[in-house]
Length: 271
Image (cartoon, rainbow, N blue to C red):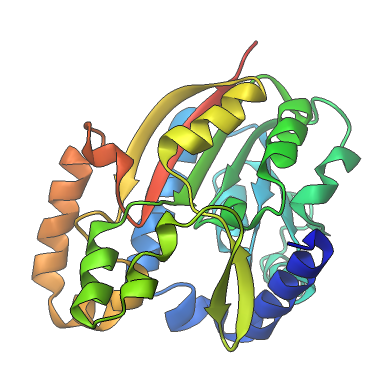
């Protein structure tokens, strides 16, 4: 796969949805459940005075939330139109002193000085789109201070509900997409997002090689449906709330923590 082409394709795809991304596509109620648990993990693991790096900021919802909680945020995204949405949001909230916004990709992380950030977070799978995840992990190891933390919600390889959903429709190839290796062309809005799926073990080993150790791990959207099943979720709100309680209780346990639409992983750089 041509890395430059994958970067262009992914950038173009996210540019194409930037205008409506805060709606049903990027921030429906199932997405908000993932977002809330990722933000909670940041609040639990990183002091509110910290300087944090937002890896794939999208439209800036998380950056604004954390700035309101007292964090200093550097928000970055590879999509110029997503970056503009974030800049507009931050300007409207008058938070330019708390939030710096940059248009840059994971392949450019070495532009930051060593040990610049106290922590980094990535919400809803941007790291799945890293053209070279090993290089990105190495760059993050360099950019974070000793003891610095990474919190990431990552799209997982094993999602039982997705497998059942697509198999029930006879879409065998789509049902088994996540089990393929390497960067894969995933359609979005008529364009392509180049995506790599991970098990927690695979993802953790990449970051362990870059100097990180595992702090915690849990499943996201294992019992709760994936975000694209929003119509089912909206038709059965009581069921979804019950499933969320079950997931919050069991999602940290083996083997459940290894499955789900996403997993939430917290890692710390060796001091």
